[in-house]
Image (cartoon, rainbow, N blue to C red):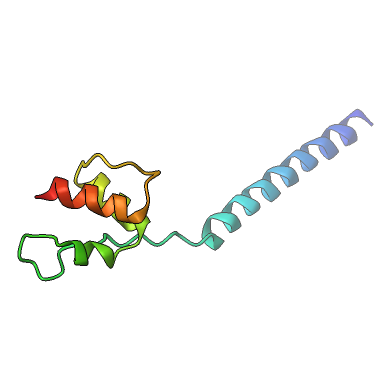
Length: 92
């Protein structure tokens, strides 16, 4: 009788391990990978000078990313116009 209980316990453990591996395998293939965010392009005409008009075409989030990329100090709490002015003055 003790052998039968031991066999049942071993089978339950093997079944639990099988289900755990099956769940891990299924979850890794079904999760979509996030797309990389495009790098904001401020100098569209490639003349080396970024104008305020070119900066105005970007969103505030893109402007903050551009400032981080160029190691510029910008107030994140400021308005978009203030962010544009700070970036433009530091890029000169």
